[in-house]
Length: 335
Image (cartoon, rainbow, N blue to C red; front, side, top):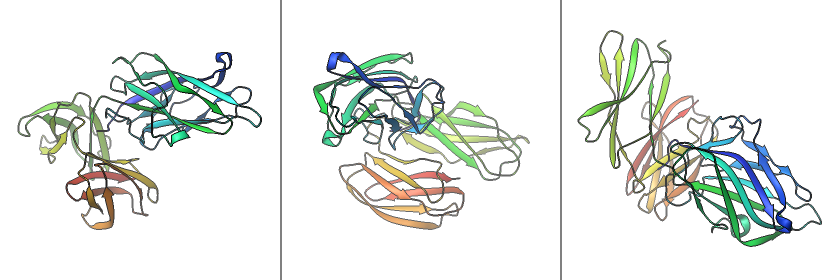
C-alpha cells in the first residue's frame, strides 16, 4: 500500500577507503525541499553529481532538505521508490568506495527501513547493510557499509531505497459544481453501517465551479475501512457520497497512478500490487463514463509497473479500471 508519508534527506556523505577520506557530499542547506534534483559538493577526482528521485516518490516542500513522500509501506523495497545519484571518477582517478553516511528525518508515518543498491548488478541485490530506525520523527544518522569495497574508474549509479512506511489512507473527493456548501465531514466505519466523524473541511470555492479535496486518515483500522463524505449545505440539507471500501495492510491489493494529478500528453506510471497473475485490460473512462482508451496489461507474479502515456484529453476527472482475474479502479485528475 502506498499513501502519504514523508522522508527527508538533510546530509549525505560518501566515503572512500583511502584514509577514510570523504569523496563527495550532498548538503541541502538553502533548498526548498521540492527541487527535482540537487547538486553534490565534489572532492578531488570526482565529477559533480545530481541527486534525484525514483518515479514512485513525489517531491514536497520542506526547507533545507531533499524531501519526498509516497514511500511504500511494504516490508521489502519497492523498485520505484528510491533516491539516486552517480559517482563518476574523473579521467586518471580510481576510487575505492566503502561507506555512505546519511543524516535524515522521517515524518511520524515515514519509512523506517533503508538499504543501498547499485548499477553493478542492475539494482538486483542489496550492496550494503540495511538500516532500520526507531519509530520517531527526530533527526537520525545512518551508516551504510558496502559488503566489499567497490573500486571505480567508471560511473556507478547508487540508489537509496526506503520502505516500511506506516500506512495512511488518502481520502479524495471532488465537487463539480460547488455552491452553498457549509462544510464537508469525512466519516469512517469499520462495518460500512455505523459511521463516525473523522475530520471536517471547509469549502474552498462555493462559486459554482469545480473544487477538489483530500485528507489523510493517519491511523486507519487494521483491516477494512469504509469512508464516505457528508456535505452539509447552508440550508441545513445534508448529502452523502457513495461509500468507499479500503483494505489496509500489506496483503491488500492496490492500484496506484502517479503523478496524480497529471497533465494531458504526459507519461504517468500505473502500479498494481498484490494482484493475481494474468492478463488484464486497462480501460480509461471520462467523467461521462465513456470509454476513451483501452490497453492490454500482463501481470506476472502479482505486481506490475506500467508506463502510460496520457493523450491530449481535456482537463477534468477520469477513471481507470484494471479488469482481469480481479478488477481494480482508481480516479485521476488531469489539470
